[in-house]
Length: 88
Image (cartoon, rainbow, N blue to C red):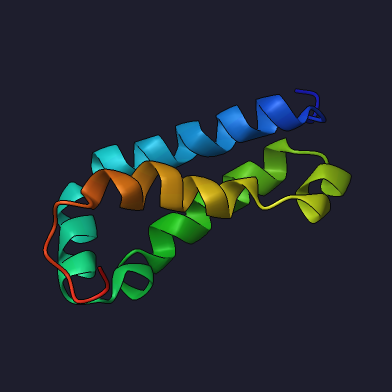
């Protein structure tokens, strides 16, 4: 499978991966937000997603962008704005 070298396609991939993380880890996400430990609680899942993203995107595009990190915020965290937390 060829590596993604389009910014648009890389953004879509990042969002799709984060959507899957969100779908399969709802309880952990809520608990992490409530305890202000989101990145600790989801460390393994987020790193697995990052590795998948890195393996599918060209090294140059990966080095120049932060699409995966943005997708974590836009797809996972933004959708959980209703969860009570000290961080917002």
